[in-house]
Amino acid sequence: MNTTHSPGEDGTREYRRILLDGTAVHVVRDGDELLAGDGRRVKAADALHLPPVQPSKVIAVHLNHRSRVEEFQISLPSAPTFFHKPVSALNAHGGAVVRPEGCRYLNYEGEIALVIGRECRNVAPDDAGHCIAGYTVANDYGLHDFRDTDAGSMLRVKGSDTLCPLGPGLVTGWDFRGKYLRTYVNGQLMQDGSTDEMTWDMHYLVADIARTITLVPGDVLLTGTPAHSRPVRPGDVVEVEAEGLGRLTNHIVAGPTPVRNDCGAQPTASEEVLSTAFGGDWEHRGIRPPRRS
Image (tube, rainbow, N blue to C red):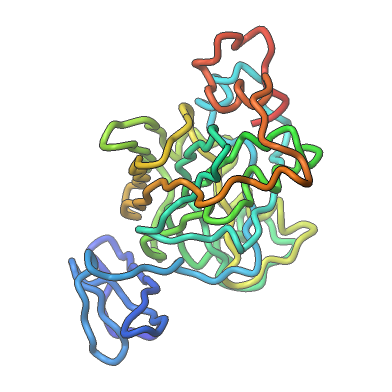
């Protein structure tokens, strides 16, 4: 990502990956334009975006925002717990998010993602910040129709194709403290959180997971969502905005074919599915809480 473009007034730089003349190119944001290393420029609004990084792995924390814990009326674990999203789930700013035919409970989860910049293994929380290259906006979509499968690993819930949009860009020099995080559906504010309500900050999460798993440059860690994740449907436009990182926009489309019914677990609408999909709006909230979130 070579560039001579100077940082913004706040000391940040924003790098993006786009398709330019059919080739994946790293560019730097310059106002409302994107500047390639060879001098070519393109309007940011006209660019075909790719995920800003190419990770070897995407790891996400289950619960971190206090508002989500309060919404579900559950106890926060004593330490973070994590799950894995395969890289085949990656998507980009402007990309279509697919709700497979036959499924009904596809939820948005606006999040901030941190990106690793150097190999990281067994570091102290106070040193973990040196391992972070930058930050981007994420939407950790969950296909909750499959919540009763995979022994709680959420592989298909969170790992199905297109369910991990990142972008628009990777921002360096950004201070995560005291920043708002908001999600909009069709222009309506649905989630309104802050990084200050995170139980474990970015550095702690990196240090925790790196105790046993080596993180390498480009790896992505999703840091949790605030309250009020709800299902969306084909035709909806979902935007996640993080202060200083930009706004990630995606649209929901219907899958062209149903999930095959001649093998494997099928989509369900169990109490576990409904309690997670509808959060605080579930009629039995407080009586039968979900197993996890």
